[in-house]
Image 1 (tube, one colour):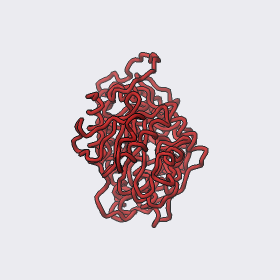
Image 2 (cartoon, one colour; image 1 turned 30 degrees about the vertical axis):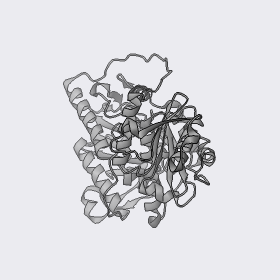
Image 3 (cartoon, one colour; image 1 turned 45 degrees about the vertical axis):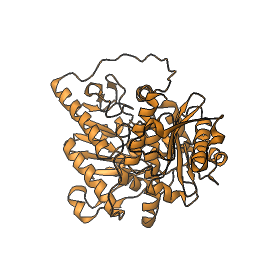
Image 4 (cartoon, helix red, strand yellow; image 1 turned 90 degrees about the vertical axis):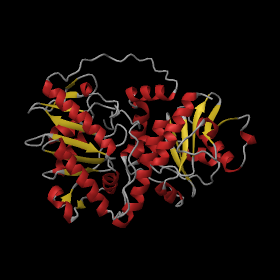
Length: 437
């Protein structure tokens, strides 16, 4: 069996298990005319070749029991989407709980619409034909009645990111209910965001990830060679600080993949900002974009974040750092679409209320205007259906706000147990054209 396939399945199986996104599920990847799938006895903590089976049209009927049912579902799920190279049956507590409701999860967060699809349907039965019917039509996932969900992706990395986002959306539906529930995006916006995601996925990230997983990439486009805008010693110092902050965002589960972005003011005219669609682990300091905060024109090796307008409009006065995040609990508040009264012990940092900006498509001028109008003098605001934006006198101050806000959201939602496991740092995410970067 291909050693790279064994290595990659082992890597992502451990990630999913460690983060409790998969407990008794299965993982599969496309291989020639079939799939390689974990068997029923596989130990996800340490997958070896003997834990995997090659399944195709010729031998699938010889399988038995639950393993056969899972293999058929994954085989058909991958086969029905010509772009899919991987799939998994996942069953985190929240996904499993929502699957028991046997209903459709509407698009409540931008990242859910982008990577998982315009909605998440529930198959009427846990059989391949019903799964294919539920997962089709601009969707990358569907629920299995009382059994979790099926998630597909172009890479195992994408499957992991989609699983994380799906788990977050399920938690949002469950945890927000006592506080008035979530609100859903318009169907048109959900379709637009998903299509843009599929068409404009980060070419840099996707190419490197496909190569790492041994997936054939037919892209022949020659990318333009640009010169770094990070030149002076001070710019290099700030760029390194932004790089370190991006990794910290991942470590503290405040972003997933390449979602989220950072801006730091250089002077009254320019800022350095994270580029579009590059994983924070892969991101190099010299790849930061230098942005004119008035014209939003940028220079550098990589395109500046599409949310540069939000950073530019907030980097005023003594505010020198802004961070846009997709935190677990903060995103749940963003899905609710309303301001949050701040629990008393966080009011010294956050004030008495965190406002919520009206929703708008990511990367648009309307979102910039909505955020600027909502945040006012507050240190942060929720971005409807989207995430969180925070500001600070420096990066450390902005992080202090971001961390306090996430803890305050958790307390407001009445969560007593431990926070969900951290996101895998290797996860991929989209190039933010009309999403984010």
